[in-house]
Image (tube, rainbow, N blue to C red; front, side, top):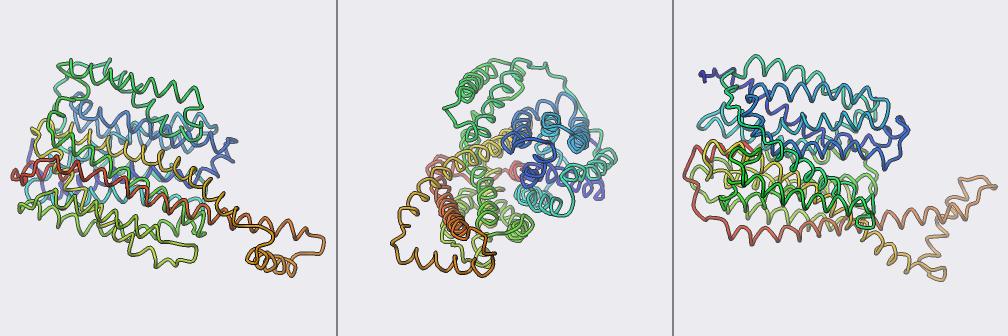
Length: 520
């Protein structure tokens, strides 16, 4: 492959990192638009959730196959095709006039977008050498953290000022620009193809197994979990499909996903740790906005702005951590500190109440940003530093898949846990409210008198008073449940420490492998 100029490398970095951030933003940008979309398309909130589910299913299906597809089609061609698919599907999502039309195009968009993430990393690995990879790794790692955080902010601005189709149309200029830059600056040397045999059976088994699992995780709560025959059936399909997939892939000379690289102990353990990181990353981005908007009255835009500054801290820390790893500091040290730091975030967040100011969240969010920075580069270094160069793209893809699955498991588990805690806290709060209570009587009279001075005589003031009391109870119920969720996620982190003891304790002396790993 020809030598690249400094300008070409800069444009390749801009192209790949921007495309990856664009894909990650689309995993969460739709969340704040569901109400408007449901009303416009004549769908229920439960049905419109398929817009999120279909994208997530497509993402998790395609990510583990990106290594094979990049080899088969050529990495440059595959990357440019993925950008085109993502961009065209965005247009078709924005012009959709029915629920199932937009669900279809969101699935297609997810197929294009999922490919962008892993392929971008592989392109950066082959573009940057030596110390140049430090900054590329930092920017890409920042994109992984920043993308899900920016989604609700950008979505909130669009919904507050415009309408939901713009959420999809906004991808078009960026997609066109990325296509032009990729065509102009990514060398044709990336298009070397080996044309391996297509493992159709492996693709089929992976698709039905992962799709069924993702559906169960995304829709289990809405379908009442295992009270639903559909959820039971898909759970069986997921288990049988994935077990058969593993068995089949291990028998193939040219598998669609090379599971033999999991013979590397560090890769296996590190993908488990990455799963935990995905759990914490996505659940915190899920629970925190809900708490701010449902309980504290923040807008989507205010919520995103609150999250953004602390995420930027990762940009400062990641290059520093990469340099320390190159000097021989054991990655386990950073990973341990990262998990301890995230535990601190959860504990601090659990101390919030309805009277907290915006300044309260500054410290815990800074701690969260530092914790994620301490985890991303070291974990990916541990995952692929022991692999052969030809196996690194596959290791990267598996790591990405585990982070996405960690997020899906995390949101499903936390959603179920919050629903359980809401029922408990509501019962506890109501049991302490009765008509003879002095505190209840005082509160009731305050609200009643306040409404009496504002409402006409014909209004049912007593009914309005009880409605306000009910709203107050529910706000406190949800607040307590969200605070419990932060502590629950913190306890989940404890599973990481025994796994860390099983990793190899050697320093990462292979500098090239280390730098390649940082590209995740």
